Amino acid sequence: MNRNTAIAQVQELMQDFARLTGLDPVGASPRRYLWTDAFAVCNYLGLFEKTGDTAFHELALRLVGQVHDTLGRHRADDTRIGWISGLSLQEGEQHPTAGGLRIGKTLSERGINEPFDDQREWDRDGQYFHYLTKWMHALSRVSRVTGNPDYLGWAIDLARIAHARFTYLPKGSSKKMMYWKMSIDLSRPLVLSMGQHDPLDGFVTYNELQLVASQDFGLTTESCLTGEIADITGICRGMGMATDDPLGIGGLLCDALRITNLATRDGPVYASLLETVLGSALAGLRSYTGSGSFRIPARYRLAFRELGLSIGLAGIETLPDRLGKNRHLYGNYDTLNQQVRAIHEYMPLREQIEGFWLEGKNREAGTWTEHREINMVMLATSLAPEGFLGI
Image (tube, rainbow, N blue to C red):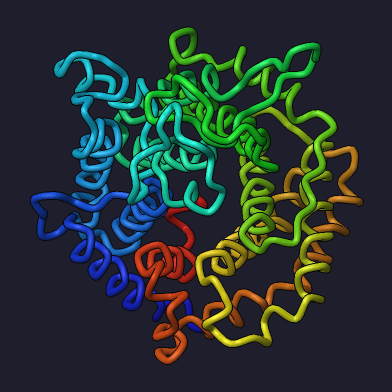
């Protein structure tokens, strides 16, 4: 697809998203979902930067406000009211992320004495760490585009509370772990297992926030996440990252780009980590493409997971040039270069994934319509990834 002509499709997708979720025109009860909204904010920023149309700038900021007002507060069907942080109305307005942000699931969280149901838990509210890191990234992008450090401050508030509540030291162990899912008020874990890439997402995002704080806004002590970075480094150490899940592979590829962005902007250089992330992504690509998943009908495929891979591949396109210009920073440059070139062989997958989900008949499948909003937003991100990837 001609990337210059994709912008019209992205505009259409994001205008439909705004209408469907009560963003524009503003609905009485906007329907907000944290993961989708994080990508959507970045998409609107990208449209603003590409077109100069301030309407997209306004939509990005309005969406941030709706997310905080909706997901930073208790649910309408909850007996609790106000900010989930417990702050007063006025304090909550100033620090809307201080208690984290709800996922935005359809069902309320599992009660304290309610038995665990694995299938039902997917539809229950709470907080996910990997959703929170996506929102931190979105807020960081808003600060960089607008020049307003308030959004970055909210991202740092979110990083601090998320790290404090999601990490824990198991009894009899010297290595910290992370919970997969926490309650709405972050007072108790709902799912004890740890997300495979949650520590990596946290590590990369904390570093990104700290670099933006120091380089873009000249902030130091009050915005420092040094302790959290050191803490999550220990959790990351020795973790296996390889996966055959397309969304997980795409996340690894996005993190690889973000790790190189740190070095490119005179931030920390994580050469060994970059090699591990690229190697894991490459192993995942080999496994996934050998599974035959692209040969099955749309009704058996999840668009947003495949589009996550497509977005990650878009980020890798710029890596050869970035690494080449900064090869003096990487003692393992030859290995990194070989890994990136091997990943580039899979670049046609991006066009294949996008082409499949741009077909109208494939978007009639239940797997598309049941997840319509997340699918359409991530298709828009894949078509125009600059807003999300910051490239």
